[in-house]
Length: 423
Image: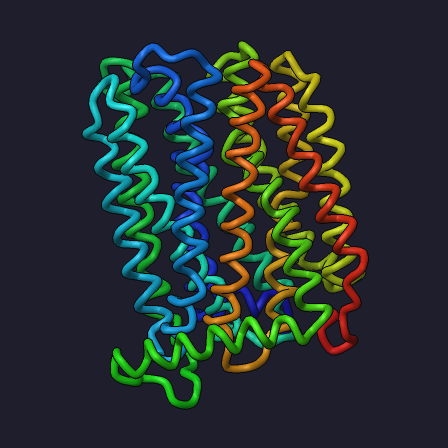
């Protein structure tokens, strides 16, 4: 099937547009505006290192909740034949929590972080089920391209709304707003509305293929889900390539997600201008759109595993350089480099894993996959925040991410992917 016809098939487009929808939360809320307001409007006068610690703990808690829930929910969704329904439930939870961040008043950082944790939990748990629907919209020979297509649309959609939000923050009077803070708060409502609107194509066009024995009563589905979860752990242990990949992924994706979540907080701590930081994040996402598409074809060309090597080596170089950046120009350069590889490491990891898992176990195995990613995402933000708090330096905190990236890359080189699973 040609790439052009593939992109416009309704199931593929509807699936990919969900990435367009929820990436607005990842970019505008998680990466940018929550760290900005937490260090300013919502702050109670705490120093920067304490704010970094609070943000790290909040991100870690959200990840812990997903890590505990994802495998069971994935297995239950498989047995009940309700992966799509589960995705919509968690998406609704996240949208409501995001919209309610608009109502949080000055100095109320505990309430802000509580709503943020709920939204981040719903976002991540929904993503687990969304990832599992990849196998329902295309065939194994197209996993790399379709996975990359989703990430590419995510970069573009998130960046378009983010550009409007940045314009509002830079020129609030043009939009009839009182100032930057009101513009930042209004962005929460805009993200919630955007997320809801562009989730509708998935609702209409994506139809999951139910595994044999699906549509069980709730009680029977839960019991079977628990049994299958235990079998999943056993199945992973029996497949050396699978568990080595998952262990490698657990480490390196932690570094990737920590950079995404903590970049703006780190830049602010180094005295960089908020407007420049936000523009740099916007640059990352506009560059990420064509780069993510390109990595889909790179996966076809050299294999998903080798494509991940390329992206991780770039991440190691960028993270090492970040410890010495103190200017807007340097941050722009790092943002450009991250934009070139961020979508690649995420999309190729997802497609490689999809090629490795048994048929009929997609929700369950993707729940396990996301569980490891979220357990890892507990360690990274907490590690960064703790190192920053103990040393009094956010530079040491960001450099600690190198340990995760290098260890994950080293383990990935030991994974022997069967020929049938090479994308």
